Image (cartoon, rainbow, N blue to C red; front, side):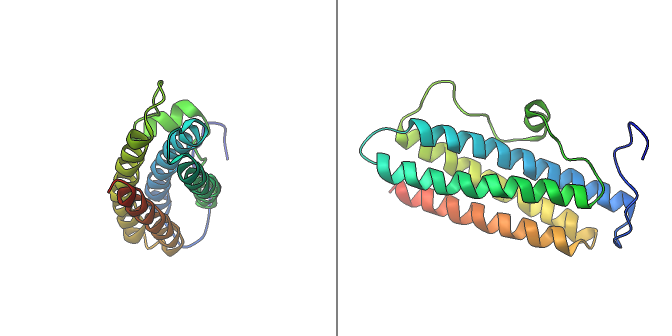
Length: 163
């Protein structure tokens, strides 16, 4: 591979153009997961109020899952022969999820923000799954379906806390 190339020669039964499209979708999923991970981790540190313990522990479970998912997503991009985005700047460019707040919101606003974010990424993941399906990339589809299930369940749990 020459300096400046973005995709390696890989012979896994998926054409180069399809691998590039799938890697682009995975990169967006990675970036959006990273944005929600960062926001959730910040909320874990800073949550206050009567639901402190419940939210502190729940946010920790969520950010730990997303931390592990970041590695899975990036490694899948690499398995396709493409370099994964590796800077905060690049992640921000690829993500449609808003960054965390400069000020610490109330616990209720944290829950509402994260609900919106998990619903948004779930919607985007459906599009990314379709890209993988069109490329006949079952490995990526499986990974993205698992991520979709996590984000849908997490959104449901957060919505349930809103009453």
